[in-house]
Amino acid sequence: MKRKIAIAADHAGYEYKEIVKNYLSERFEVQDFGTFSTNSVDYPDFVHPAATSVENGENELGILICGSGNGVQITANKHQKIRCALCWMPEIATLARQHNDANMISMPARFISKELALEIVDKFLSTDFEGGRHQNRVDKIAVC
Image (tube, rainbow, N blue to C red; front, side, top):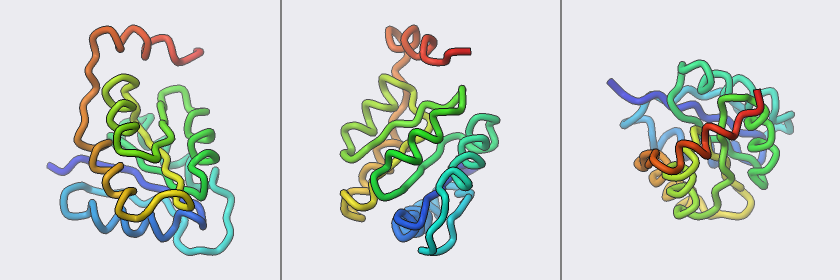
């Protein structure tokens, strides 16, 4: 059974979203929450449904892409069960999984290459949470 991954982007991240989605489609079941073109959109309209799908277990992990990576990350992190890390290097994606149990990442399409985006995604999806001393910290993240 393939792991389920949510993906969403705004207009600035649309091209990268399509590349990542196609790259992952043979190994994972990828649920695309949009956007579906380069027309200007409001990213929360796509991020909230993607984050909700990770929060409720419909998807195991999520990938978000916008111009800076910030707007989609901020939006996703409004969800109590989401830990979304802004990643612009593969090493950050690795640490986000190992130490923070990140269940979503955001990437800045305007600041990284397409090849680097795929490396980041690979690290995010192939790294496990270490637990141990990190679990206590992760347990303290949610406010409610």
